[in-house]
Image 1 (cartoon, rainbow, N blue to C red):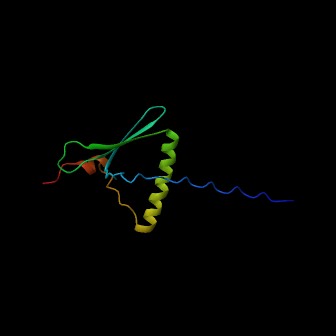
Image 2: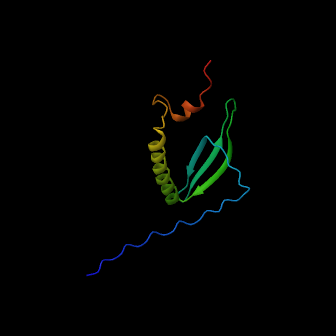
Image 3: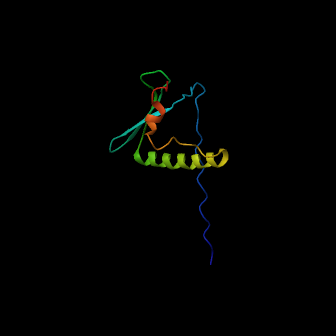
Amino acid sequence: MTQATPPSPKPIPQMEIPEDLEPSYVNVVRITHSPSEMIFDFARILPGMAASKVVSRILMSPLSAKLFHRALSENLAKYEASFGEIKMPGDSSSLAEHLFRPPQK
């Protein structure tokens, strides 16, 4: 009897990053959705600003968004294993209220 050899993993496609690609710092994301897509508006808000500026809009299928969620969770776990737990704000307010409350005087 012969044993079946497991299929070899598919190679990961190479990513081509344009030389003129400018990285963007974001600290806010608004997520909306329709039945067929997830929309991520990545934005940046600075202290004293009344509004945030959207710097990138990403659209994904719900399946791609779920796969992204899985990959992000796995990478956050690896990060915390290397650098320690990422502390979250207390449960007394929502994350948005904690991050964007007016400065305390």
